[in-house]
Length: 196
Image (tube, rainbow, N blue to C red; front, side, top):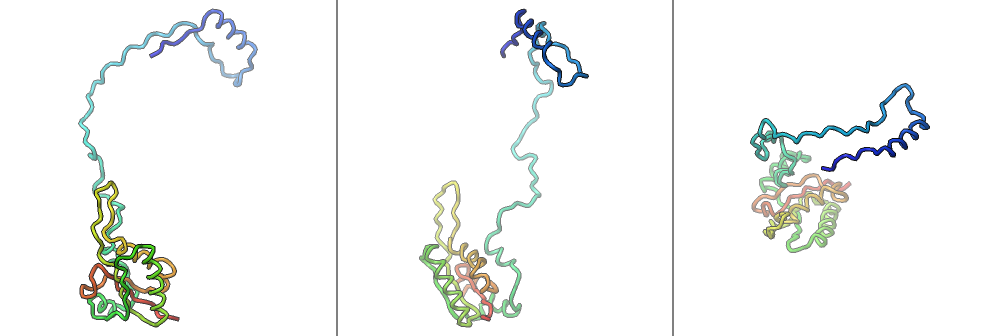
């Protein structure tokens, strides 16, 4: 640590002349002139009396608090509110309703699949269809072990998001994973609104 520098006699005289000519900001408050005497040397800091307590990472973390990680897509679709007739919804989930049309998006990129899906859904609604099947596939495991994991089945996760956005959102009444005989988690039942 550097020692403090004290004013010499010449610097002290210059400071006194400047202080005589200066107008104080607060005339009622009087402060003593800077002291030319050297400051007493400080003692070296002594060791702390209490040693540091044991520390473990996460010891104060609140594990009861819910996290903000998004639930899996299947869980989100399962807990989504039912917007259609509950009797028809039950039949659809059990695979008792037969889809009137289907589109297979296997092997397509996102850029190819999105316009195909939009034209299929809007075209089906204009034809008066009510239940269609959108096959996305379950996806391949493409995680190369990098720092950011990739999801299994990019189209499987992207298709419901596309359906929740315009122009498809106005045409769709309900989306749910398909029954095993129609593709299981690799396909979606899409129940369309009536064309008005």
